[in-house]
Amino acid sequence: MPSPSFQVVNPATGEESAPHPFITDTELEAVLSTARDIQREWASWAAPARAKILNDVARYHRNNLEELATIAVREMGKPITQARAEVEFSADIYDYYADNGTAFLADEPIAVSGSGSALIRKQPIGTVLGIMPWNFPYYQVARFAAPALMAGNSVLLKPAPQCPDSSASIAYAFSVAPQGVFTRILASESAIANLIEDTRVAGVSFTGSERAGAIVGGLAGAAVKKTVLELGGSDPFLVLDVTSVDTVVEAAVEARLDNSGQSCNGAKRIIVIDRHYDDFVRQFVERLSEITPADPMLDDTVLGPLSSADAAERLAAQVQRAIANGATALLAPERRRAFHGCGVLADVTADNPVHREELFGPVAVLYRAADEGHAVEIANDTPFGLGSYVYTDDLNQANRVANALDTGMVYINGVGQDAVELPFGGTKRSGVGRELGSLGIREFVNHQLIRTVTY
Image (tube, rainbow, N blue to C red; front, side, top):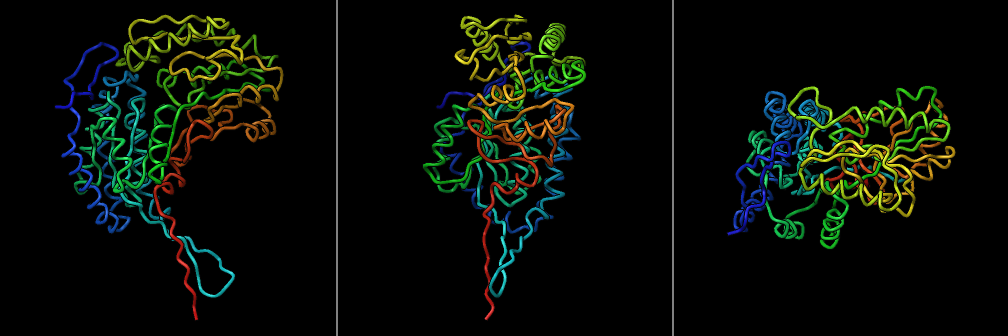
């Protein structure tokens, strides 16, 4: 018998739930066959009929908001107010693709030089496998599954090992769809590798670490199939020509502590031009020193535990390694089991290991930049290229800097501005492809050319 691997361990309390065993090879074969067979029927449905299913799923999220949010807190320690917001945002995503999918999937005429006509028709590609992370157990699934399903694909969801309960809730929400349209699978790594290689799986969406994403991308590439990879990030937060540092400090704190610092596109490197540096550092460190980890079930908690005691230990080890290599701890974090306090590192040079790593937790790295050009140089000196934040009162500077940043997303004078209509994705080692917005539904479709000649 295979050993169990999917299990909830509440990071705030250490309480363990009963483990779930891996799906067997026989069960997985049946699931895959069903998903592939039902996909043809699902694709034949009119788009408004598929949209109704997504609207029903959105309604389930809203009607069960408190239960779903509490599950997320128990699985990975997310503060309850943020968990509620995630569930609501996920519902918005299902509704967005239900309401706009028909238009997004409409034929696109092409002007031709000769006689006749041409158009691009968007067809589903088949069954799509989603390998999802733990940090946003509802949102990440929604932004992958909603557009794929609206386009007429069937979906297999492999959740993170600590997220069996949230994924079970999502699967239950999809019980309004024909069996096999959306299926949750608690599969081992070897089983997932076999699925990626199976010809009945047409595409793969992966969100997670750079290391795991490279493995998934390699397997999918060898099998010549479409992938979307949303990997790590070490997003820069640039403080340039601003009049008031006070408001920017609050934005930087919010950008660093979102999801207890466990967001791929959280601001992890704070880059401040020289004339603002000392004032910014003083206020930033003071503000973070006031925030301590607390019970994630309390409405006023800003910083909860990390996803596990192991995650907190890894972050603490990164901080100590950075200090051993010359970094200065302007705010030294304390750790108790999975609870990891806020930290601020400075004097991180290019040869310090942390300079090219992602800190997944409430620790920020501060850089002093001589001027705008130097700030951009520091921002781009990373293997990652997910998002970035630019604060300036000069919109000409904002646009100039945005054009110079090697990132998939640039947020000017705002944090927490993710929205269903805005595409999400990065460059370099942060992955390939886009999710959300009109671009999200284009990833797992065949853009079929139809050229008709009259004679």
